[in-house]
Length: 240
Image 1 (cartoon, helix red, strand yellow):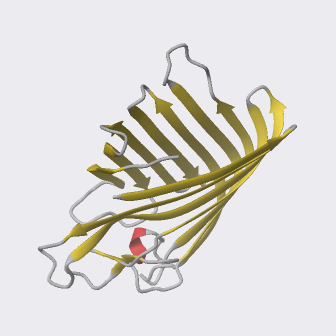
Image 2 (cartoon, one colour):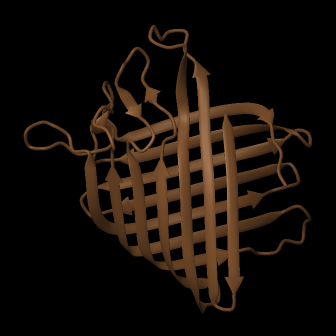
């Protein structure tokens, strides 16, 4: 499991600008796959920018833009159909609303909370796949003739929340919640990552990722739109 995060924040007077770039990538052995020796697990490239204008206390008027895509070709075991690929699909989210930021101070050392909540009643979501040679039912809706679309344009409302809690010098909990609805279809993600530092350079990470989308085809042999991904990792970590 490899994860890279970079951010740049600017604030002057009543104006603020936050930019965050993140990549997540997992590659696993696949002894049961007769077509390839490995499988791609987590695979995400995400960039988000938020412009804020001071309103009152911790609230800002804000506008945001977000870009999400995969980075590599991803297949199911013993399948030649791609689940996803670079720009297949990619998603662009644009929204206008209010943002709440909080960084309370704690008496105990090495304890902190960084919370950001974005409420965007006016949102636009655009999803497009540069190729149709992917698992389209996992992302797009079905046409009347039985084929699947490869483009999605929809307006709705969005809730975004991220929190980073440091319980001690060695234990942190990162959480991200995303909810979008066009009042006919709901897409939601809930990501949790607990990181326990064993030494200065070694750490253990527990990840739980939940996704719900009632606008796509259900997974075979399952009667739910909820997808669950759990992961445990041990490895090298360095921050500065």
